[in-house]
Picture 1: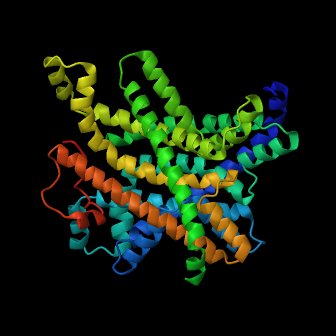
Picture 2: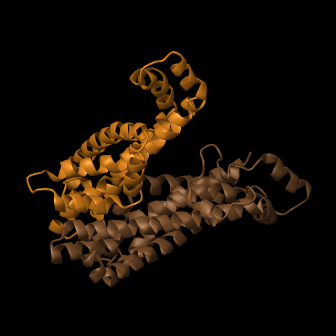
Picture 3: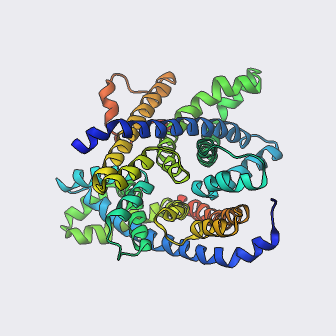
Length: 212
Length: 241
């Protein structure tokens, strides 16, 4: 068997539908990661709660996301949609990474800023909301962007919990038609078509923000 | 606890496969990272183009898609049927190798220019310059990122369970379906992954310390136990300044 271009063209629409699910999972999962990660980074600075949060997220960060997906998928009641589980698990897993990014940003805020807040006896929400976070987040935008691409590249794991993303579609085509070459190759190319341009954009961002 | 103790040998077998995949995958990734990374620092435009194409292509595609491609698509157009473990090592190695190549390239470029100029003044050959002067300094800078990449590779190795390799994840799946104890079956596997990761992190810190000592950069004193603690922020190990 060799490469069949006609067959390859005929499966493009189905793969693109899979790609749409992939992108949906990426965007929602990333929102979860970016928001939760910030909370984790802040919680880590609180006495007593901080070390517990640290250990929990260190555990999440150093164990495979695939196993976490299978685990939660097996635990969750059948009524929960696989995509919801997938998005939640990917989001929490990546929150462990984004929390580290926020942490480095928060630690990069000059000590004098904290002291000034204390001198003005600002309430905590003003300290974080008006002084620390605006400075910290600005610096970590490129690093956060890199995790968007990483998360995108981890969405094929959702295949394992039967979410109809691109790899799932490619696999289904392979089983129906008894030919896998075209479907898997196209899936790989579609991945490249999204991730390479995004990486270029992130690198531009990096250069612009690094100057600050 | 009883659940885990009864099945410990099974989990240990799985963990050994996971470790094997990690070691072999890292070996492939390391060689690729070094070769492609050095190619990326050369003046020759062809060498640089090869390096760029490789890193962009293999960083851009998910390891799982590469794996399925090697395991299911390649046998369709070639007479070769790769064994699942070989396909896994190849997919993990090629993917992580692309990330590593970028690290190697950046670390070599970060070695101060004066170092290279000095070797030219001393009439050293390119090979001696790399081996004796540039790489030892770049090495100390690469190691922390290499450590992260090895952890990523170890975690990613769980994908081989999807093509039928009996690694730790596969064992957990089997134990879950045979016993119905989801929490225990997966919990045991996750704890073992965590332990493997901590051992790898510790090992990489040892290597980092050795690399810095050889360059005369490591702080004096400090027992082995110091390595258990994460480095204090601000003292960036391996940052050549």
